[in-house]
Structure formats: C-alpha cells, structure tokens
Image 1 (tube, rainbow, N blue to C red):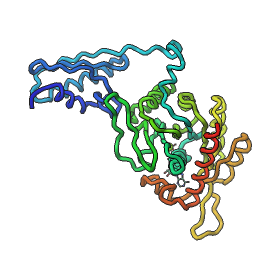
Image 2 (cartoon, rainbow, N blue to C red):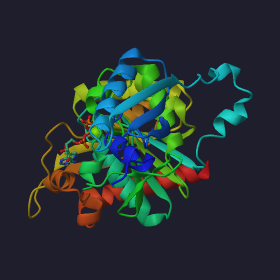
Image 3 (cartoon, rainbow, N blue to C red):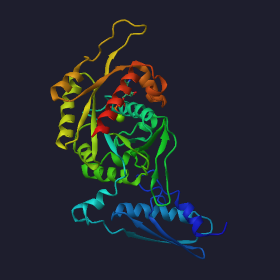
Image 4 (cartoon, protein in one colour):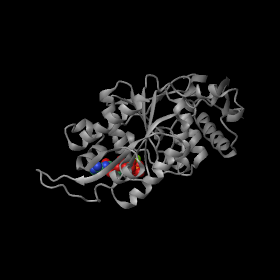
Length: 352
Ligand SMILES: Nc1ncnc2c1ncn2[C@@H]1O[C@H](COP(=O)(O)OP(=O)(O)OP(=O)(O)O)[C@@H](O)[C@H]1O
Ligand SMILES: [Mg+2]
C-alpha cells in the first residue's frame, strides 16, 4: 500500500492517549499529517503543558509511525493548546452554562460510604423510570469504581463522532455513559477534588445527551470534596441517599444530608437497602442488619423515606449477570420497591 496520510492516521489510531482507553486521533490531538517521500511529518496539539505526557506521546507516536511500512523517517512537532480563560474571566456566565446539555432533570444518587448498594439503586431506579418515561439516561460518575457497564451487561465501548463528541450507549431503554469508558482506573486513583470537577464537567459536556429529560447520576461513594464538586457541576433537581440499616452506615447518612443541604440541592429521600431478608415460601422476615435505621434517619432529618429494599440474592445475581432485577423479576418485592422510588422521584422532580 502506498504511504499516505490515511495510512499514518490508521497507525496513530492504535496509539492510546496515556492513561485513557481512547486513541489519540479520537482525542483530537493529531492536527496535521504530511508525507514527504518516505518521511512523515506530524503535528500534535496537547490539551495542557505536561513534559511527561509529551515525551510519552512522542515515543509512542514515533514507534507507531516508524513501524508503518514505507516510512524511513519521522518528524514530530508538539505544541500546547492555549489555556481557556479561567471561569471568572469568561465573557459571561450564560455562555458557560450554555455548554451544559439540555437536560431537564439531573438526579444524583449518593451514599455516605461504599458498598451499600448505591449503584444497584441507581440502576434499578433508572430502569424503572425508563419504563415510565421515554428520555431517561444513566451516568456512571463513580470515578473510583465505575461498575454500571458490568451491572448492565455492556461489553461495547461508546463511539466518538468526527468532532469528538461521545455517543452514549443504549440498554433497557436507557441512554448510558460511564466515566470508566474514558479513563483508566490507574489514572483516576490519584484524582482529587479539582481534577474530578474538571473531568466530570467535561464528561457531561462531551457526551451527546440529546433527547434526555432525566439523567440519573451514580456518584462516587462518600461525601468528600470530590463528591461536593461533582454535585456542584450540574444543576441538580434532587439527590437520593442510599444506606444500609447498620449504625456504621447511618452515621454517614448525616454527611450525605449535609452535603446536599450545603449546596441547596433538594433531598428526594433516603433509601434503606439490604433492609431484611424474606424467607422462601413465606414466614417471618429475617432482620439481619437492624431494619428501620433508614426510616429513623429520614425522620430525624425531616426528609422523605423512600423505601426498604430487601436482601435478595437475585439482586446480586442480576448485578453480576448484567440484568437488573426490575427487568428480570419485575414482580419481586425488591423490584416493586425500586419502582415505587422511581415513581416518587419522577413525581417530585417534575413538579419543581
Ligand atoms: N438488596 C440487595 N440484595 C442483595 N445483593 C445486593 C443488594 N444490594 C446490592 N447488592 C449487591 O451488593 C454488591 C454491592 O452493591 P453496589 O455495587 O450496588 O454497591 P455500591 O454502593 O455502588 O458500591 P461501591 O461503593 O463499590 O460503588 C453488589 O454485588 C450488588 O449486586
Ligand atoms: Mg457503585
């Protein structure tokens, strides 16, 4: 095959942007490719000045191009895109928020601590909402443990358009996007508040959320700076707090309530997950973790109590297998409870 810009572009499509699963071409950093006999000239534009990033990209681009048949030499020019004006100096606030997609209702699902079933609740409530509304989307913003693609059985990666916008995936009537598609775990493990803020904002802006009315957001567990800055990124219609009944989990509910209140985000309510265990074939339910703590907390803070979700092996099986219980066993007590929460959330946010 004759050496041309397309051959080189193809080679560069195999070069990943360091720390990301996307390639440098789809990232938009390849500005120009010129061929001069067997010599290739490429110019790249990095989003920020970063010596380490620059040398890593230089190395991998050089290797990829020199491995392309017909190439004898390569010349790489790397420049840095001029920084955008800091937020306070932008021409006007309206312009800034104009970049956010046209979504009517942003609904965040938070928890004081990890492992309480926050993603399970976000998924099942979103799928239940999608049965009642046409334009529901789910965004996995759990930077440190994105799990929604697995829990919805998604194996594909989203595609990007020519102008670098990402097309969300579809499943169970939902539009879906996960930060895990774009950023590797190694990269995010060291992220702190400001980086998280920037990444999430960009993540929301770079995805084509056309035709979305309700966006359910699975936040990272906890109520620290990162979660706070995330919650501030979008105009939330409301927040749901998920807890389990044990005292250790309930202590953290208070922080969740404080987080939303601090930012004037309406609290849609508290969900108590893993409340109790139903016995097969009826009989008394078994109270494993101290059922009722979530309701108590809700009363104490004067926020709605949205319901109890029983421990149901089918929830875990559905999570691992990629089919949420609302979809696989809509008649189960848990699915009915999730649906009730979805009805309540829709009811409250749509009134505001
Ligand atoms: N009510 C339930 N009954 C049985 N299993 C459940 C229930 N809720 C959640 N699980 C299971 O518990 C595990 C943890 O749930 P999930 O991943 O939703 O928690 P999380 O709060 O999002 O955790 P993380 O903090 O890691 O993001 C999963 O395997 C899930 O399937
Ligand atoms: Mg989770």
